[in-house]
Amino acid sequence: GQQLNQSPQSMFIQEGEDVSMNCTSSSIFNTWLWYKQDPGEGPVLLIALYKAGELTSNGRLTAQFGITRKDSFLNISASIPSDVGIYFCAGQLRGSQGNLIFGKGTKLSVKP
Amino acid sequence: DSGVTQTPKHLITATGQRVTLRCSPRSGDLSVYWYQQSLDQGLQFLIQYYNGEERAKGNILERFSAQQFPDLHSELNLSSLELGDSALYFCASSVGGADSGNTIYFGEGSWLTVV
Image 1 (cartoon, helix red, strand yellow):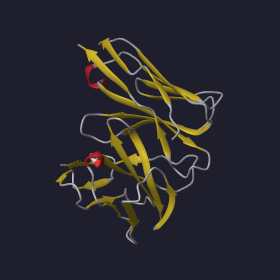
Image 2: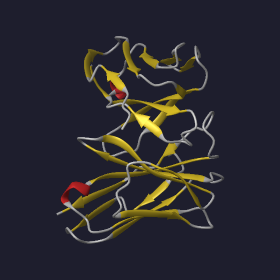
Image 3: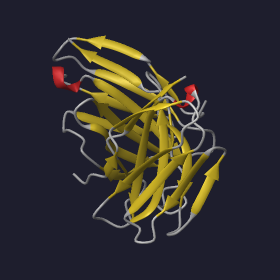
């Protein structure tokens, strides 16, 4: 099936550092979503993007819907230990009726 | 808490058996989605129901089936289980079935182990 290319696969950073991760695809998406998943839990929605070029913030998190509609990035500023987890991008194709295509995830580790 | 409720949280069963996973969507949500998460395949869309009717199908095996009941809860039935079916099964819900602007919220998952 279709895949999103999410990078990096993992990151190990110091507390207080900024983090950036992104997703790219060869397909055009109508919607980009960013989720965080903690061990044993379901993905929790962080940010939803609905328009090309849209830049949205949620606290220390900022995400953008790429102009080409084929990519998106997520930035986390001033990371803290509770940011640890796996971050997934997910895209929704036009007419897909809610079928989300997920990236493989970025595993974030934060060193206090 | 996303408002999506899944039961059971954990399930261990033998190969060849059949199990049923249950999901209650968020209040007011008409769409229910089922996803499978495994280590090698990541999160994969299985199937979607909207107001009781099947709306979209993804990578769902023929051994698996689902339905959405009049009260909008959904069940995912997994039969003739194989070792490779061991995975986290997530239910998600959203208000509508249209694409744009349709935010999807996930439950905490049902962890299935086939032995």
